[in-house]
Image (cartoon, rainbow, N blue to C red; front, side, top):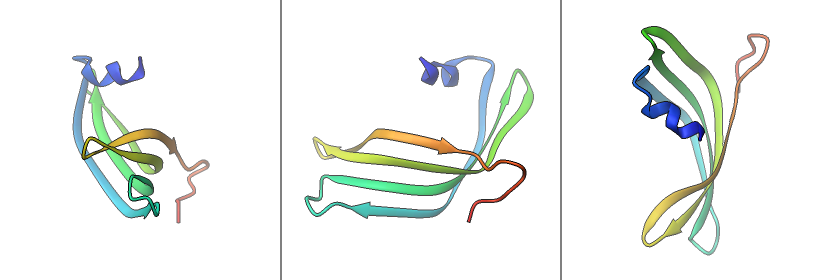
Length: 84
């Protein structure tokens, strides 16, 4: 499973920054969609890794009083273009 990558001893999270956060709440109050720009910096085996200006989108659902990510997607700019 991909999420196990973050549990590997080779991975070290350093900093995550979220900007331009937008949340749209459905009328029922139990579902929401979100989008934001993510800068996520870390290390793998001591080497720097990063997603810069990544568009992160997803769908949240409220279950037992807690918001849970039901779906998410990451999009990275290509050819050096920045998201707007």
